[in-house]
Picture (cartoon, rainbow, N blue to C red):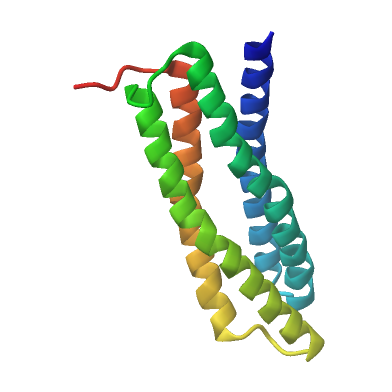
Length: 157
């Protein structure tokens, strides 16, 4: 009975990571395309909350449920697909952690511009380009991890 529950929790965590990441990206891009500082500030505020509430929770729960599943199934940490997934998880973290701070800064710059009825400053656009670029490797790494979890391929050479 414990295995189905752990697996379900692990799949839910993966779905939250994928869904929240895609949703955040979509809404931030759409707000940015509006060019309206007030809209961007509002959406970025919501995105920052969603990232902390949903993404951070899943980021913590995934390794916990994954480790419990490994122990339950008797899979060693050196299993090739698990090692690959963990490596990609670290890559995701290397891109996601800076994105948290970038989103907060973008939100603050948009708030300030909206409050002063000014256009967005050049710093906002530099941060947006970085935020946008960081999203691709992280998102694709999540997709590859999902494939690894489902296919469990033998990646040994």
